[in-house]
Length: 321
View 1 (cartoon, rainbow, N blue to C red):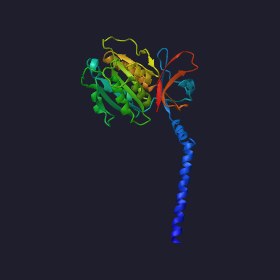
View 2: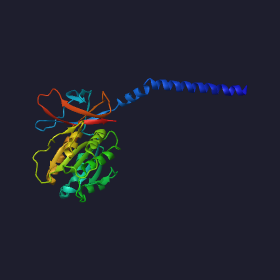
View 3: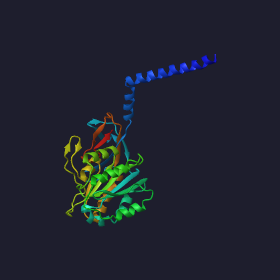
View 4: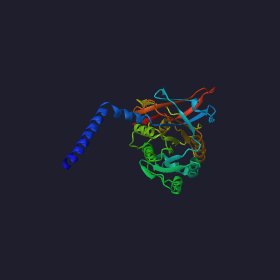
C-alpha cells in the first residue's frame, strides 16, 4: 500500500507536466509568443519636443493637441500634448577644445551661469564632456556640479582635432542611463565640420533617434565672420533613409534642435539666452506608434487651422529595435 501511495502522485505529476508541455508547444506553434511580443512593442511612447514660432519669430504658446498633425512614416497618429515649462532636464555640455576651438575657449567665461539659467529651478542634472581628436574628459552627472561648473569656464587647450560625432555618441551614452521622465538635451559647442571621429554619421543619427536626445549646436566660424541670422538651415542630402552630412548642423536638425552661429562671448551669451527660452517654452507631443515596425521612422509635424503660416521645429525621426 505504501508503495502504491507514492507512485500514484508521481504519475499524476508526470501527466500534468506532459499536458503543460504539449499546451505550451501548441500555443507557440499557433503564434501566441509572437503576438505577445507585438502587443508589448505597441506600448512604446514616442516623445516629440516641438517648438512653434510665428513668421516674426515670436513663440506661439497657446496651442492644443487638436492644432497639431503628426505623421509617422506618412501615417497620421493620435497625439497627446503637454507644456514643458517645468519639465526635468538632463543636460550634457560638449565642449570642443582642439582644432579651431583653441582660440574660442576665452569666450566661455560665463558658460557656468548661462547653463545654470537653462537648467532653471526644475529638477535637473548636468554633465560635461570635452574633446579634441578624441573624447578627453567626462563628468557623467556627478551629484555635485561645482566641479563641472568650474570646468565649463576653464577648459584646457587640446590637439588639432574635432571629433564631434564621437563626442555626441559619448553624450548620448551617459544620457541613456538617466530617468525616463528627464528630457535629454545636448549643448554642443564646436566647429561646424567633424575632424577625426571614428563614428559613422549614420550610426550617430541612429543613436540620436533611439535616445530621443535633442541637440542644440553652437558653432563658431573658423574665419571669424559674424553671421547675422540666429539660426541657419543646412542643405539636406540623403542616402536611403539617413542624411549624408558630417556636420554639427545636420545632427541638430535631425534631433529637432537648433543650430546657432556665434562670434565672441557676448554673442554666445545672447544666443544661448534665446535657446534657453526655446527649451523652456515649447510643447511635448507624444504618441503610441500605430505601426511599430523596427528601424528608422520619419516624423513630420505641422500646425493646422492657423491664418498665418507658422514655423514648426520638431525631431525628425525615432528608432525602434
